Image (cartoon, rainbow, N blue to C red; front, top):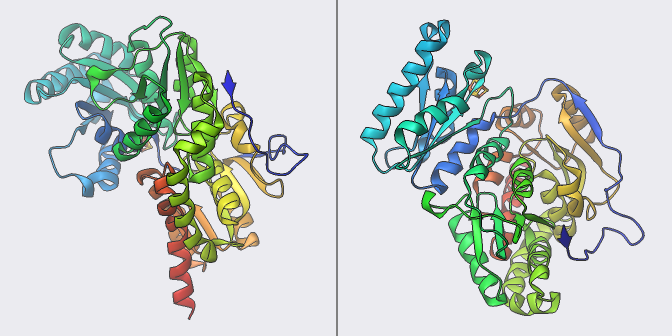
Length: 428
Ligand code: SF4
């Protein structure tokens, strides 16, 4: 592992790295991992996601993604009926027929993901075996993989992690060639910005997981340096490490500071100095700082409470605190990977509650008692909290919007400023 020296939250402390974590288990209010298909299918333009699930799964996907579909969708649900659940042999036959029909109707598909759901898991339908069997029929034209997006096994963004992890065994081996792999789905515009900066720094080749097209699977080997672009790709990164890749430890590229530290850490194994990264990014950082200055007035000193949702909560709390002067009261995360989150924890102030997992009723009580200025939560909690007079921000928007990098720092601040401005207007 390698990384660059980082500033810490307060001199003489290590931020929140050794802060006790409040762990609670109970009822939780989080989308299941199927939701990741919404951004994954837009990124991988020749992939199709076939959910093997129930009408509930189909409805979830339709209501979460339906309004965004302009062309023929690249995801669908093979709906399991009661008769399917009665006998396993029929179920496999049915699935084979559905896949054959789909692939003959959609010849542009190059990767087909069979996505497990709660019902397929409950009846122990082995989709990995099904993927192997179907690959025998449809490869090499179509690569067929399986992963779980079920609400029993995964929450919200974990669906992307299990999807990307399923691709790791397929990545070609590139021995010890030096390369940088950026892991986690990014908006194309953000990816293009990153490539330009890396090119100016003389770092490369740069590869992305997931790639835009199936044919561009990034190779991996002992010369591969991996850097996380999204905080939820933990299992994928561990799978890449098992294939010999080296993880670069860094804060996430949110805000001006986070993006700079991320680039500095990425550049270090190539012998590129912090000074050189600062020089190359000077103009972009200036633009980012100028755009943030406009939001400081609205956000400074405002208290913020994060319910656990996407695993993006800790990096965002760090950004809002350090670059905009907000005060995090509680920062909840569904899971805390201490190693991957270490550089972020080092930058958080200590006077907050760090919580992992959820017992939603108890957390709602803490939120009401804290009475923050703004609460970040899932859609299911936003309406009840608004009804109680709280200002909320839908966590899902933070995952769907391009928010990485210097040029998106202002847009990220705007996502928090908007609900606060609206609340102010309503108060007048
Ligand atoms: S996978 Fe499970 S939690 Fe997700 S929509 Fe289907 S039944 Fe619901």
